[in-house]
Length: 500
Image (cartoon, rainbow, N blue to C red; front, top):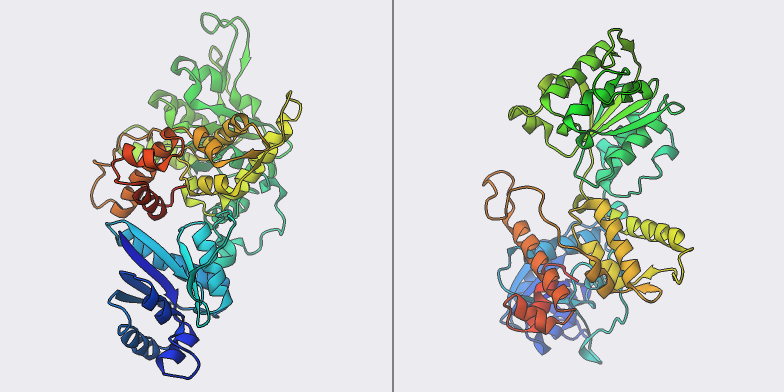
């Protein structure tokens, strides 16, 4: 197992290197003199020449391999810059490592802000041992006896995006119709900004996104923010309509139009007149139905089954799909002319794994909703969630997106017998998800954006979580289940792949 020390280079370290009096060896040299590390990674925001001289001097105290990483900080006390620099260095190192690592962060060098960020990282994304050193007390492990909730800090730590600022320029300062879409991630801010721009217009909208990402919620927000807000919003699940009934469902039918048509029926287009027709999972429509839908959209009129007189309509169409319609067009599964008719404005909802910072908001909101809905249930106790349980949820990719997150929290609220949802409650509530594509980890196309370290990370996270669940949190038993030699090695793998 490789032991790695991470540290900022502080001014006290540079003074020690220059031989100034009453400084001693400085925090870093003191640590590497008293403790053994195989590798030392130093992050610096000092002149390159100072860093080079310091490393040359430090090598006289340790045989460890020393690497340096330059950081560009707007200020040595800017938490956002410090956090991004430190996390970037750790992530790059872990992605390149093939063996187990034992990480240590040195709190003493640098500014108090740098020390605070090490604590945040150690208690959230990348667990590690924290050490501190002084001339009087030597080198010792720092005791920080609390857990933090691993909320990624997206907006406060990210530099402004000029394009996003331009995109949102001129919008109304408040958009209450979109308040139900909880978010603070950069990716969702871009989607919402575009949705607000298109909402006042009547152009067709295509919403793309995986199942459970909230496509209907976004469609309703667009409708409610537009000029048709006081008229019907009619949602249709195209994938749930039997192929032989699609025309009747969309366009309606006259009495006696076919066997079983014992009365006249108004179709969805008529029901949505002057409002919005939301065609969910439009990619599931068979080709024959696509032809008839296209004609209706082109002519702006429909004809009920069994009737001869067309009926004009005025609807705004918002379509949604979890399929790649461009690929479906190439394969002949979706008509290109229909695609270009519905895809005037295209919004792509990101999956939960790309919404850094949103999961914590959703956990709190969903848990509040569960508590409100369950208050009348016999014996129900209002629940809160522990930091350790929340951290596990924040580190998970949520392939089933918001829907999976909701169901997991509901199960955990049922399993937990007290007022706090603990780590084991969440572990037991998480269900193994089957990848909805036929593309296995071993058969992904090379050169198509493949990321081998990311694939290895997903594989490790999957089996580590499964092992922990099956072993009821016993790391020794979990290590045996996945072929690791000891619980210490299992813990190191958990640290490396951000599990638990």
